[in-house]
Amino acid sequence: MSKALPKRSENYSEWYNEIVKRADLAENSAVRGCMVIKPYGYAIWEKMQRALDDMFKETGHQNAYFPLFVPKSFLEKEEEHAEGFAKECAVVTHYRLKANPDGPGLIVAEDAHWFDATTLEILGSLLSRADGRLLVVMTGRPGDWLPDGWPVDVVELPPLDEAQADAMVVAMNPTLSAEQRAAVFARCDGVPFYIEQVVEGLSESGVPEALYEPLFARLRADASMLPVIEAAAVIGRLVDRPVLCRVVDLGEEHVNHVIGELEDALVLEAWGPDVWRFRHELLREIAAEVAPPSVRRTLHGKVGDALASGADPDWGLIAGHYELGGSVRRRRRCL
Image (cartoon, rainbow, N blue to C red; front, side, top):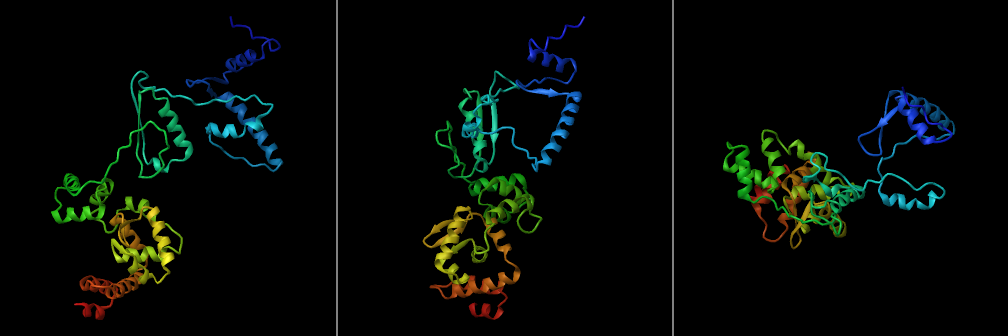
């Protein structure tokens, strides 16, 4: 014999919960504080939603979706608007290592330098409540993205040296010659991911597809920066600032500004007095492709002229630029 329903007038909450249960509208979820809306219950919700949606749209309102979770700081900002309401909400304050609740856990967060403030806040909460049972491994580029006060040990991972890179290339493709392996190292600067992609794509021309987009993203700039980027790529891996200024025919202040922007974007790095260096040869290759062939030929001619007017010119290098610029006559003069 089924249990009698509680009286609505005596205990509304118990009466309501019992109605939902007996009508098979919903049931408790395995996640505390959550529930599963079953087909009958969802059908009722859909009818309510349609009716309410029509009412909202009649007043000119539009629908929008927002994240389920928000930082606690957002709620604190809105505290003054909550007057008269029950200030209650579900707050995620801890986690459970469900697979092995009594054992250690591991979370890997890659490319943390791209994380927004909310994601970093969640990671910080995990770290503060780890109780020695959770290892969080984060990877990221050099920079100030790591918040102060986190209980972390920072491990700097330098690029592979030439011997280490050579061993990696041999392991991936033992048929490559010493000359080919050296060329891979020159293009990749000891970055394992770059080495992997370049070795796998040796049969292709240009920069491997998997690397093109992430590297090209660093070069995305406004139109005023493009002439400097194009000219620097044509000059070579090492970029002499006075030569760059003569080639682009722009003011020194403008060139210095662009160089600073490219340093911030991790495209260039200082390499001596008035000399900058592309951080990776692959970056220079992509930058060189930004300019159309006709522009590249013109730039090679200008680079040749700029180098020829300098002290102690390298005529072999100058001849190479003239050749790439299509000026056979000026090339012959250098030889």
